[in-house]
Image 1 (cartoon, helix red, strand yellow):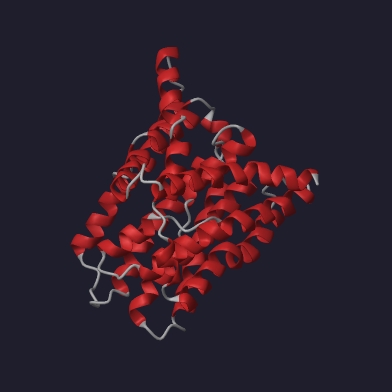
Image 2: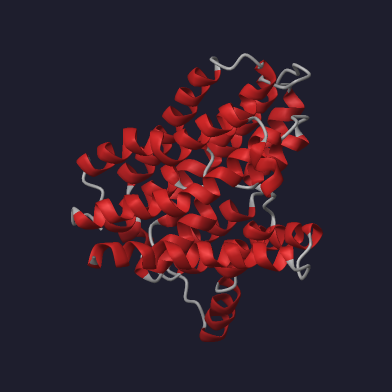
Length: 314
């Protein structure tokens, strides 16, 4: 019972904030436009600031774990490869890109930080997980969505440049890199700056989760049931079943194991839908997977945490 209460305490507050966002949308206090702007704000300001704070105020030399970062990178690549193979079973070629992206791309930054903060009090190892997975998320999303575009577009130089520019100018990546540099150079953070940074960073998790909840559309969850259910299963259970035992066998515990769990088994990020639409895909399959995985992850992530807690790994 103690382990179950621990797991629920880690997950329920996160999802209650998402439910609050959905409720505020339903009663008209938040509309679609406001939710979109709030998502963009969290992505561009408080989330990068929070990551900067967590890295700048620790000894990065002591924190760095190359084995962990490499594991996150390799496993992310394997997820994409396996999702690509399974997508070949879909008769409609135009949905394969959406299927692949929605199957592997987690809400790693927002939910990873939220869960680790909830359990351990700070973002901890989450920035290293983000370094290992998020750049690859973005690069491969452009590749697969371009290759399986309904208009059969090919990857050209401008698309590649745009992708690289998007990664380099990604606020989350910038926040991590600046925080790393600050820590490596052992620069002091004055108390006034520290309190300001802390206040801004503290808004990232609640605002981000409420914006995510306010962005959901239940009506879209019924579109393309078969592929949506298959992609959701991969996202919530399939990849976790394959790779979490490997992570445990390699000795990852505590924050590292929780970060890997979120990378593998958390809900598909809402930005998948935005990217799919911007690259001329219909988006129905993606929105369905986002909705299903968000609802399902409340149960599956709790179950994974309960298992690891019972085994004494977290």
